[in-house]
Each structure stands twice: as C-alpha cells, then as structure tokens.
Image 1: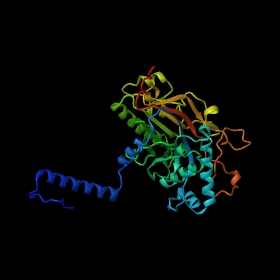
Image 2: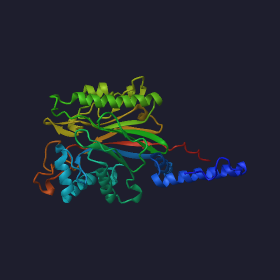
Image 3: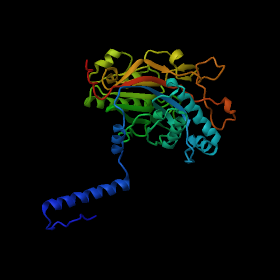
Image 4: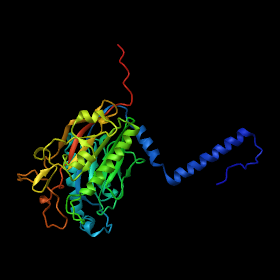
Amino acid sequence: MNLPLPRNDSSPPRQRWVAIGFGVLVVLGLSYFAFGPSDAQRDAVANQAQPDTSKKLLFCSWNVENMFDDKDDKRKQVDEQYDTAFFKNEPLRKLKYERISSALMKMNGGNGPDVISCIEVESVRALELLMAALNEKVKDPALKYKSMAMKNLDAGRHIAPGVISRYPLSQYTTKLHGQDLRILETHLIVNGHDLCIVASHWTSKLKQSSGGNGEAGREKYARTIYDLYRGMTKKKADVDFLVCGDFNDTPDSDIVTDVLGGIGDIKKVKAGGDYPPLLDLFAGKTGDKFGTLWFDGKPLIYDHICVSGGMLDELGWSCKPESVATVTDGLIRPGSTRRQPWRFGDPDQNMRDSDRGFADHFPVTVELSVRASKAPAPKTP
C-alpha cells in the first residue's frame, strides 16, 4: 500500500507529516479489521473492564476423566471409543457434561468455583462445551464464566489440561511446556495482579511400554515445572505461582518433595532462597480424609495444589492453606462404604443413566484472595 504522498512531495512539512500519519493509521486500521485484535490487546481490554476491589475466589482442580467433545476427530485407537461415542451418542455426551457441571455448581454456595482447572479434556471445543453447560446453570449474570485457556495437545492420548474462569485469563501468555507434556501455563490477572497458574497431568503409574511404572515421566514433569517456577523467582522473588493437577503420585513421594520441591513447611516456603520450595497444601494429610482417588485398593492423594511463598503474604494474590479440601459430597456411589469416586464409566458399557457417576477423581479446592490495585484512601474524620 502506497503512502498518500510521494517522498518528493512539495507540501509543507507539517501537512506532509499529517498525511503520513493518516496513512499509517489507515494501515493499522486495515490490519486490525483483517486480523482482529491480538491476544495482548484482548487481555488489556478485559483487564480494564474489571472493578478495582479486593476479592475472594474459590479455586478448583478436577480430573474430569475423558471429557470429549461433539466432533468426530478420528482419534487414535486409545481414544477412539470416547471420540466416537461422544460424537454419535448425544444423550450420553450431554449426561457427562450435566454430571460434571452440576457437581461444580454445588460448590461455593451454589455459585460454582470462580476458577476451574480441568484435567483430561479432549480439546478446546470440549472446554467450550463445559463452560456453556456451567453458564446455563449460573443464575446471576455477573457470575457467568467469561474466560478459558487451553491448547490442544496429542501426547499419546489426546487429552490436556484447560482452565475456565470468571475473571480474565491471559491468552497472550497461555502456553504449553515441555516436549509432548501436559503442562499448561496461563495467567489470571485481576486488579493488575498476576497469578501464574500451571495445570498439569503427570505420567500414570500404570505399567508403561518400557516396563516401568512411569517414574521417569513423572520426574520429567516435576523438573520441567520446577525449572519454570525457579526461573520466575529469579525475576520476581515473591511471584504468585500456583501449580495443580493430577500428579499420579502422593505428597510424600520423592518426586513431589525433592524434584518439584513441594513440602509442608510454611516457614521454609516463605524463606525462599536460591532454590525456593513450594507449599504442597496436601503435604502431611492422609488418604482416609483427603484421598482424591481409589487406587491399589485404598484412597490416595494424587491431585495436588501447590503454591509459592508469594501466595503466603499480604500482597497481590494470597492463598488460605487451611481451606484446602477434597470434595466428595454426592460424588461417591450411594451405598458405597469406600472413599471411592463414582465414575461415569466407559461409553461402551451397557449402563443405565442413573448408574453413571462423574469421574474417577474427586475435585480439590482452596480459597484465594486478591488485593485491590491501590491501597484505599484514608477515611476523613
């Protein structure tokens, strides 16, 4: 596109610069309409639209187990039964989304969690369907879910983490980490305060093709996440950082404590250091009271929420460690005497709708808070 005036134009300098400026604006305007606003521009607009007051939020992480969308994506054999059934069997698919969304909406006084990290989601489309199912149940328009963050990923199985939120999630900074790893980084920005959320799904303990139990894979997840966290603390020692998800390992495992640095000592976490640890909110807790799944004949804690030392101060984002909980109400099969999640079941199982539950994990929650961007003005006498 040519500028309005050639370089040898004899117009007065001021007119020439006005014309050139106008031409630049035209180019930018055409680019905007041709390509739309960038992720960074959308983030800025969303953040400006927020009220500037301190807030309390409920955060939830849940492995929703094989949540597939309404499209036939011709997945690999390991996922084909879910891909095909959820595409062809609309009542079955709607029942899955109804189960998960109904359970979520019972939390937080019937309003649902403010931020939801979901594990085992097939695609961005599947996360959109869940957000729509949630919003159908939200009574207050101000509490509708407005933002989501996810990247499609094929890492053996076509399942990945995704996050849904009532508050803006930065699309500009949402990314995956590692080579074919289910590690999603996104940023929740409220009142100008940035919370880095890392949602992840580590390698299973089920027997691997190599013959092992996935320990090497879980160690790779832990190291990748810790390197990300430590790199952020180099730039900002009190960074607000939260990592959650299905670790497929217990809080006392060497991989969680030594590689990820997830411990239960709040003083050490606050102290930081060159290799700052994270506070695992489930450290020291037992499976009989906090177990998130049933495995190997007993309840175990495989779903974690870990936070940085920056989440334990009174600046920006904060976490209330004592509020951490494993949600089981209504999620155990009626009549069961075990702390075992009520599964939805495989789609090819011949089951009545009333026999289908939710997922093979329980959700975990914790209370967060975020400060106003500025200290309130002192009251006049």
